[in-house]
Length: 206
Image (cartoon, rainbow, N blue to C red; front, side, top):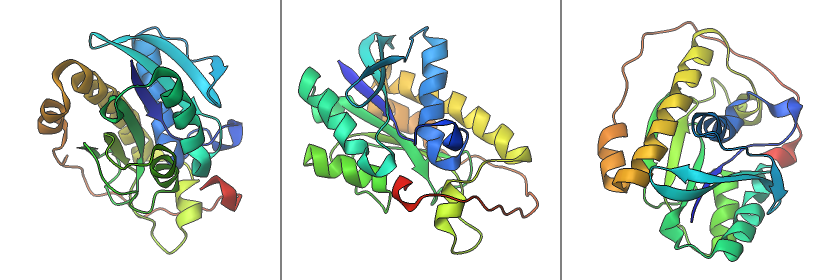
């Protein structure tokens, strides 16, 4: 059983925010493979199915971002997979909007959701798919990751979620190396106008 976990914050308030990029990819996978991610367990919403010839558990933690590890650990203790069978999908401000990066392991890189997972699994050697959401224009990181996409960026992210779902399928059917070779390519994108936004947030969500 592979655990495919997309990170985000629960509730309508956070739908469509940059920090919920992982949730968006899970939604695409669920729709493509007709998996209902609606069962409440492991402190999250889950759905079981088959993707790329592998049995998978799709997981959307409902713990808020900085406690994501609690949900993933609960699923991990139940199914007892190898750590390389726990694939985590999350937003990354160091990548341009819509850019993907697959890694077989790594540090948290300042991402509190990944930091929580490392703490609860006791290792950073689990694969991940990073979905670029762009860097903040100023030092307003919280406003940035809990803000929403608009205009061109919104369309770019819709495409990125579809592409990330393809990356998950390749990871499962062909292995991490093949998926990395195929999807770790920087996409060219046109210049766009500078935009900024503000959103009131609670600090515990990040």
